[in-house]
Image (cartoon, rainbow, N blue to C red):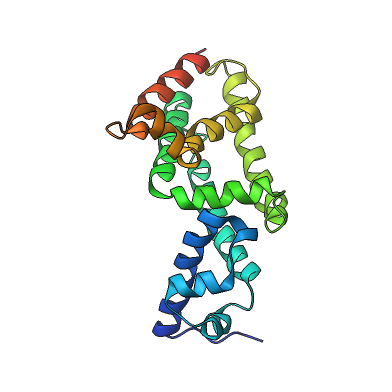
Length: 202
């Protein structure tokens, strides 16, 4: 059965619930979050919330699905026809920009992974793995052509994830060390692009 499209008010309420849930989940994790907390932050009654989403898990899965699509977009943009170092540096910058713009989403994703990814594991098989394998093959091709230093392509991608998403997931720790007058992501861009450029130069 085709679901009727939402009215503007319904769309607004759905987005309000998802925004509130993002706030609660990123702070409390899935297990610590409750529907009552989400409803309170959203400014809606719990029965009203349940009209839009039947469970806490349904809200969480919706957020994770959106997030995974957002997280994969910078990797999708890696162009096989481009200049390898330019493409990789652009990918690093896009990943850092995601850490700047979506720190709560990054922490939500990290919390899900730490719990064993019970609500998003299927998407890893359907969406994440094929894309990573595809782009690893591009990196491998560039290495075969002598345009990049020979490294393990999948682990190169993992290293970029680790070094860029760190700035969202561990923001409090970084600012405690560097001080509030620093812009860690601006400093990280220069450092990481130089690090990876030197590492990958053939």
